[in-house]
Amino acid sequence: MRNFVVKNPVGVTVLAGILGVMGFFTFVMYGMARNLDTMTTVMQKMGNDLTSMAEVQNTMGHDISTMSQDISVMRKSMTHINESVGQVSQNVSLMAGNVTQMTSMVSRMSYDLGRGAHSFSSPMNYMNNMFFGP
Image 1 (tube, one colour):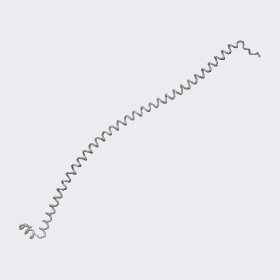
Image 2 (tube, helix red, strand yellow):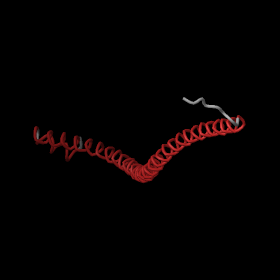
Image 3 (cartoon, helix red, strand yellow):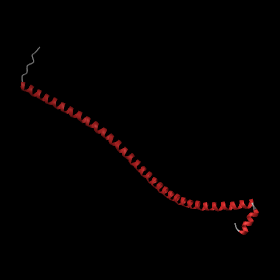
């Protein structure tokens, strides 16, 4: 076997330095690539999340529009209810007047029924009172 003898130690040192620098550069590039991969993954997830958020906002806008229409319908219904309550109030006022009138008519009817009953129970007395006063 032959002994390996280095004839140019400067060349070996330069080669070792170049290999060391290349190794360090490779290590740095690997770290950067790993960070870039992580950043790309995060950006993809963020893009998906933004897409989902845009869809939710579109749905929310549609829901708000529907809710606004429903509130408008409710407002119109409340206006109709107010008008109906006003109509009921007028009808109750008329009904109260009619009840008063009916009460006076019932009073007159009771009086007439009493006179009718009196005339049927004692016709002669009724005739006597009719001509000569009660």
